[in-house]
Image (tube, rainbow, N blue to C red):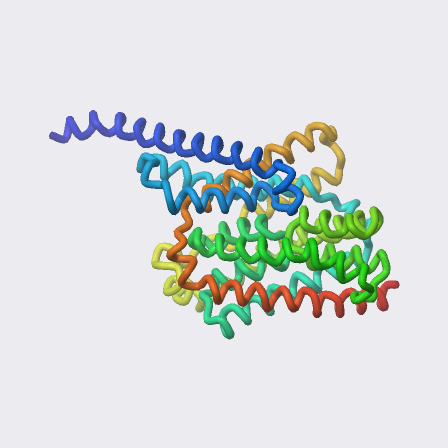
Length: 361
């Protein structure tokens, strides 16, 4: 009997590995279709990146047709939503360089730091205290608004080891309010209600709009100079992903917090040994590598294209693992938290921009 068990084990392992590979291949093919869909003029014109389209399409599939997917493929979907996303977030650093950050100098850095820190603090407080959200959902929603939209949600999801539906709620907030910004900000600027010059518009747009694509889409309606400044300020916010993740890692692993984390996230998430997410250090390493210009431009563009596809796979996999019924439980509260943050980004962001221009202008 034990001999039969020993003989069966290798075959079972091969079957499990094959199922995982099939799951990864399925997600990759799904992400390829999503990438083509996101390139359609009607969708691209809205500033919706493949990442956003991926989580929506994945959620639609996961809630309507997932029963048609073989059960042993789930390991491949989970691999794409967890390990692959860590690798992809690390390679995201090739989109940022220290030289670009230096171009906007202290005003851009001050704008980014003040916006990111204040939005994270306000979002976490409002989510947990006012809206009674759990810690992870509040942090994910705040991170998506504060740093770089869906990519930040992915990075925080990995660090917090939170449930997929919590990430989906945070991404939903990014989609709604980020898309609204693309249309609202240029209108407010051209109407003269923002009281900003071109440089100020670049600082404000780059400092407060959620996604990179949304920043470019909004600022391109002002001027090329504003677009250039806004993009660099936005990438400075992306750069802040590293210190923020390190700080969050230390916060959730601080003495006395393990029991609280275990109560909210389950016993399997109780004390973690390492507070520093390795992919955040990888991100920083790739920023330095990109700043040294040791890679040919064509190679960097190719890697960035592959990285976008990997992030799309991760978002699609997260969508497949998401259940609408779980989102409904906290959906309105998470959305209200996103709205509070959006009001802060407009009102508080304007105040920060005016202050930064007075101090450094």
